[in-house]
Length: 148
Image 1: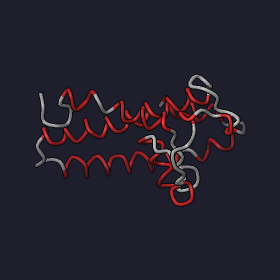
Image 2: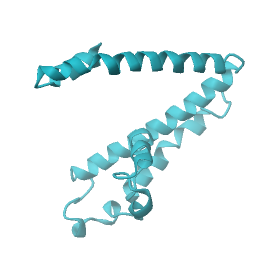
Image 3: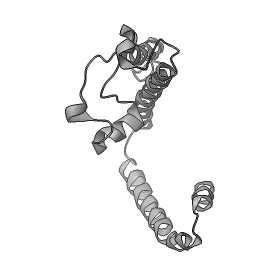
Image 4: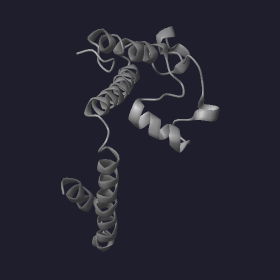
């Protein structure tokens, strides 16, 4: 309901509101079907395995958020000069460029990976260090490894 109110408030022309019921009904039906499939498929799954999988997935998502937040700090020149690119310190220069095959701006799969996991097609050492640094505490605490 909150998102629907946000969407409706963005409409400049009220005639667009008449097109909302179909996507809303389709979304409700699809969410019901996905929920049923999920619950039927996980009836025999042990909760322990499900929780471990979810915790590891959340750790990957959080590590991506952390790495993306470090990128934002770079753009704000907190870690050194960001713009122009030729004046960047080594910590803000790209390590490799995978934008030819794996662009996070044009390839839909990698756009999704950037949104979910913080994927970068041109990472900097600072972003890589941040991503790796994020992974130091979870194994020490036994998260996702069977520790309690």
